[in-house]
Length: 313
Image (tube, rainbow, N blue to C red; front, side, top):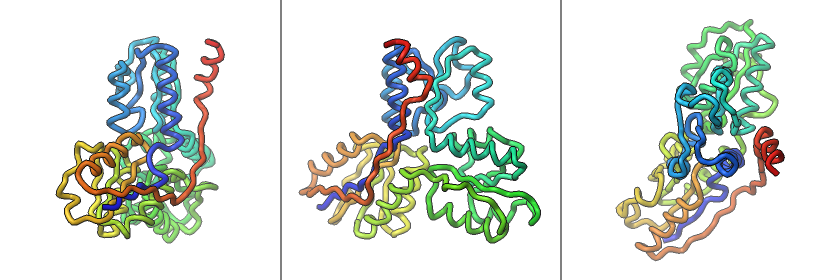
C-alpha cells in the first residue's frame, strides 16, 4: 500500500498563533483561564487544554468577574467585547488576522452604506462574529439558490464577503450567481478565503484522483476539514473525516493500493502520524510526502499578550 501525505496539511498560521497564545497565557497566569468557544475546532486540541484546567464557555456570563477570557481564533462580535468589559474581564484576542480582515471589511462597507452579502455557513462561530459587526447591514447566503431569493434591487449598493474556511469552488458558484444578478456588486480587494484553506483544498484536488481512499484528519465541527472531505468525494473516491486513528476501520482499506492522508487547518500533526502507524501495523506501507505548495506564513502573538510578556520580563 502506498500512503501519500498531502503537503500542506494541518495547522495553519492562525491556528498556530491561537494555540501559542493560549499556551503563553497559561504559562504567565496559570490554567485558570477561560476561552470563549473552542480555541480552534479540533477535539484533540480542546481536550488537551481542558486537561490542563482551561474552561471553554459559550457565554460571557459563565466567566467569573475579573477573570482572563481568551477570544478564539474564529473571532467574536462587538457585543461579546462589550459584555467582556461589563464583567471587568481581562480579554486576550486570539482571533486569526485573516478573520479580523473580514470583520474590518464588514465595518467599512456598512459605514459606506452598502448592503453586505456574507457567503458562509449559518451558525458557524466565524459567521456569528462577522455578522455581529453590522447586523443591520449583513445578509447571509450559503448557496446560489439563496442568491435568487435576495430582496435587493439593481440600484442598491451591494458588497460581498466570505467566510474564510469555505470550499473555493462552492464559494465561486455563489459569487458567480451574485455577479450575474448584481453586476455592480463590490468585492473586497483581496479574497477572504484564507491561504491555508485554499492550499489544503488544492492539495486534495491534485492528489485524490490517483487515490483509492482519502483520509481527512479533523473534527466534525471544523468547516475547512469538512470541505476537504467533500472535495475528495467529488472525485468519486471514498473519503472519511476522522478525529484520529481510533476511528479507522480495516475494511476501508481492503484491496486498496493508494491512500491519501491530509489534515484540516486545526488538526495537529500527531493525529496524522498516529494514522500512518496504524496502517503500518496492518499493511505493507510505503509512505511518501507530496508537496503541492510551499507555505511560509507566521502571525505574531496578540499585541496585548506581547505587552504582558514585556512587563513580566
